[in-house]
Length: 272
Image (cartoon, rainbow, N blue to C red; front, side, top):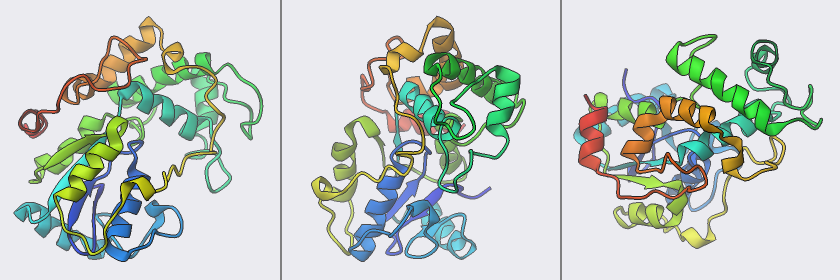
């Protein structure tokens, strides 16, 4: 299986396991800048040179050798599961993508027909009940994760622990897992642990939120989107995420983690 979703700087200073909807655009741009002294012009997910990515055939052998020998500092980044699935909904379900179309073609019409999810008409410009639509989407997301119906789970709402585990199962070791909620502190710890061709000053780094502007603005606080049933479904999908990465399941309004991540525990549980 190798190391899907793994990026590495060309200098091999840093190895990063991408977790969608967890600051991956900003992290990728920081890695790119650390090698080249400039940011990639465009969405870092589109970069085909200046960085090694598992999705590129020329990079696979280099990444595999590096990770197996643990030559570089390896890390990943996680996010509160409540905020993450809500972000996935507004970006991928409500939003019009960079190509001017809906995400995954007929996905949104299928959601409208099968789950009654209404997200603002064909172009996303109409008013709609965000809370009702999101709660129906969560039911759909749960069905994809638990039953793999009506489709396999999408990478943007499949569990973070699933993404992170592939790196461990195939022979990788994480040196750190950082939180998006304390991004600068965590990313600084990563940068302090490595030597890069160019110094990165985090306070000067823009936030490369490539999904910004794709969808409608969230109209309510995070906690308003989650009733008892929706919280139950979220916990069913993301139990390991809450437990391993120390997020508070009981209170959707509390985005911050409530303890330190135990890397030994993460490797033991997700590498099993």
